[in-house]
Image (cartoon, rainbow, N blue to C red):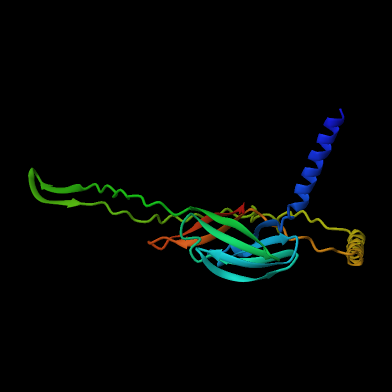
Length: 248
């Protein structure tokens, strides 16, 4: 029994020692910051990436073995932007490395931006030519054919004009016929009470200590923009943008 107890104590100390030697994570959270600029007539020019750090760190952003930017992150929330020059030409995956240096320790945070495009471009369909029927006009004098001609029918636009019905019917022989409108209103006293309550609520909100909400980071955002087809037709494109992370 004593040997089992000693073995348990030894294993517990071994686990605690391993935990004490494991450094705390530097990157607590990373994700995309959603923005209204992702939805418009043209694709977004950049994406915003936000991350939470447990301590200060120097950083380098690397793409295709080239350093795009670098600097210093502080403990807490930080953000940086990604240029999207070729992101929205077609669906694809774009790899990045965020290298962090804390003292002598270097952490490499690999992440990828996956873009999935879904356009609603008009489909080109072959138009079937309209069938033109011809008819013949023949002129006879007695039994003798004196003239003949072939004609093609010509379609003319309809000259019929749709007249909307009148909003109400009036008998012209009745005396001053007028439409019957139902008029409703709000009592002045009830309006004054509602206005007083609104002012009271606004005053109460100003007195409260409003704390800023934390910036929400997402792994997936969407973008909607417009494009033109070769024949000049404008159509909408829906893009799904996902940030995926890998740790080293």
